[in-house]
Image 1 (tube, helix red, strand yellow):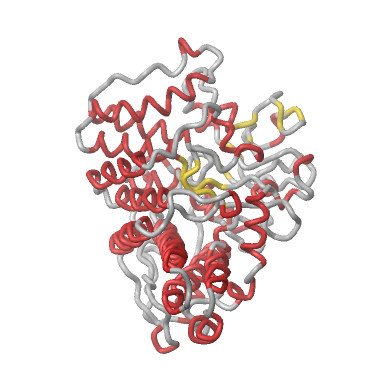
Image 2 (cartoon, one colour):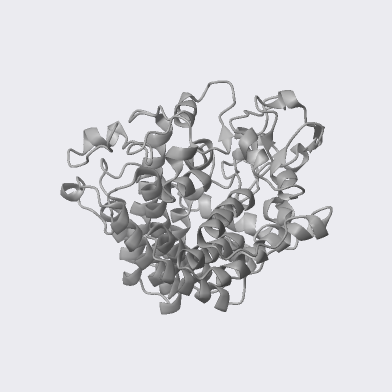
Length: 480
């Protein structure tokens, strides 16, 4: 497929760019060492921004464990596996420390992306190239810088906000408040939206679009509880006229139906045995299946939260005697009797388990609709909130065995009741898509839901000890 050709070239064209910026606080910045000589042509800028996407990949090379923070730390999953990833076990039970490997890897990975993005933003204006192309490249880099900062702030809270190429004397920065980081994300994403196209040709599928940038802006406003801005930004997304829900919920998780009308920002993976595949296909597959690691098992609480007949349960979770990628699922396949389906695929589709090519859609249009519903409900506009909520439920209802009696339309306009219903809808609609833990934290209810969660500590994860050792101006999160 063309998207795979693009993404392979994206990763391989400038691998040395990413290798040179693996430690923000410890290395001479790429921009000062190489970029002055490298940035000469439009192709240079395109290759440089291509490399800025690399840290998004969920693979063994990146050790991108965003899914551990968003899903394993939540009430949707428990860690399975063979104990070979003790850091994942620690995160599952809130015993992580500043030395936890997954925490260290995630910090370094995202700051590598930020360094690369800042290089592109700074150097691209200086090249001799078409202004429209330069603006697009800068817009992509602004979006990616915003995305990396956003996820860092989700995971760590207050983090260094890096907006320029840094000289060695300037790298020992302090942390910026999470609120200020989210505000900058909204600004960067808004600026990116003004520079990016609504869509691309087939060879460029996967690049950030205007809609993706607006969606990231809306999400930043959501985390800031700026409900009016959420509603107005979602209106801008809708006005683009390019997004709609797929009739089949499963289309968002099948190899042949990716990058569809529901995809707002989709992280591309390819099964080419070259390190650009999605390793969730191995990480989450039951260890009872050859080459499966089984590092995510579905909790009974998650299974029980679905309303009777909701087809999304079957589309999200495998249970006893159900088909599981060509094998009948047995209760012994996990400690909970259930395993996730999303981001997994049959052996016949891949050359090796760790190199799957199911993309991770970081932002789906259904989530945009649920942001709108949540913001409207928080504003007390409960009648207006029912419409986007119903759009999401109606799609699921249509796929039920008995649509007439399944997932009835919500009619309550009581603010408290409706907010709880919308939160429930997020859980079942977006299950195992890395959102749940962060939702519980932003709603302020993690302490009431998660066993072992310590209020005032576990809302965020520890700053890596290696970074504290390198930078005396960094302070640790409370409790660690």
